[in-house]
Image 1 (cartoon, rainbow, N blue to C red):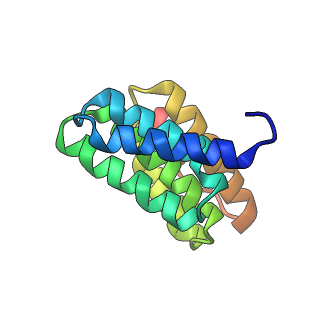
Image 2: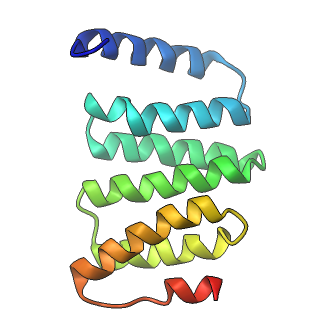
Length: 133
């Protein structure tokens, strides 16, 4: 697949078809999150990727798959940044999400990196680190 974007697009679309036809479960949620975050965004807008991730978040939350819901929301915030979302609103959203991530330290580390980046861009400090202290 190296360098052949048409072939990658074909396999991404094929995988999306398989995931859409499969039963909704945590494995499909996580596979969809990875597919949208790391492959599909090469071919579609950040906004479309964002909506796909929010859809996964909604499904995962409804079925009680907390880990998939957290990761899909975390990555949807990343694509909100790429799509030009208001940075102050995005910072507040990350801080709210961090409150739900106390148990998932690895995801929290990713979110804190984003918080630090946004804080430096807008020149303000949030209380994000207070959540863990």
